[in-house]
Length: 245
Image (cartoon, rainbow, N blue to C red):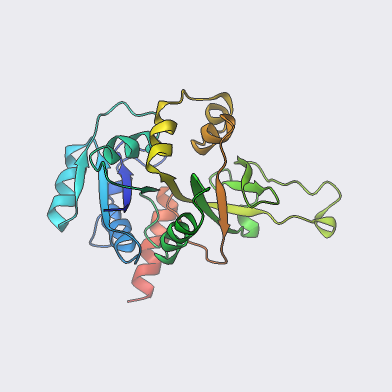
């Protein structure tokens, strides 16, 4: 296998405990994410990495692939790096956050294509349009880009700030989506790095990579997956599902 997608899943989410197993749609949330990822065309395997037996049992029940990891991981990418070590021949490892049930699988193919075409990309992610109501929402992470398309900074704050008002804005505000792709060696390098001050301040794991002087390519799309950060987000997801039946 050359490309794997690993979905890190833990039970104790601070903002939404038990989020991965929320099942008001008739399926646990983690199953929706797994099935969305499995529709991507450029992946050789999709698996879920967890340290929780409840999540393992749920994944096995719906027929998904699960890898058990240690419990003491400071972030999802660290857990994904441990799981990836079970696949020594892998070239690209995608870390897909387990709260993206409406993910467009095309976005996974987008990052794989970019990395396979450009061997200089060690890490890549995806961003897209930021809705007006998300500008001041700290759960909606923003990203500012260099001319190269690499990330300059990720923040929960509104960046880049238009000092003279929106009429004078020259750079768009972009929302960062929960997809990270790393070369196999790069994700292990990430896992070996100590947590960094900006990462700990913003509570954004991708900042560790930037703080260590590494580059992350940001692929911009016009698609807008809706992540689940809170019980309110999940209720809206359930409602959309009922409406679309």
